Image 1 (cartoon, rainbow, N blue to C red):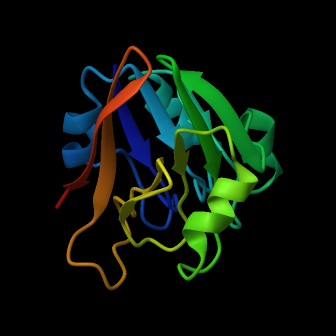
Image 2 (cartoon, rainbow, N blue to C red):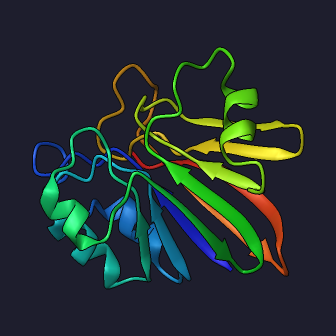
Length: 163
């Protein structure tokens, strides 16, 4: 199972339409996770043309994104892998223990907010922030995430530059 992970697309300020480098990664996706700050539900409609979209609310998302189906958190099963999502994981200091307490049954916790790519494991739980594909801020590249899942096992979790 190929899963593309996005966050902080910030439409229409930064996401006018799906960037070609992002679209190339979306080809063949089985699912798309969006960790919030979509800003316009039309982005979710656009992404839905590639694969089913699972989304959480970001601090810049309004009632229209919530009406699309975004909640504060989301817990789901992706190919047998227990996944949790939240937009803001809090400060990096103490993140591992905090996310493990908040989502004790998750194998993978996806978050966004900082625009800083993050891919670390704490006590067997992977914590993954794809960064932003449109607003890199102080990062060297805009990024997204790509996950490979098989039979409940996370085979790979990669951060992909999408310049």
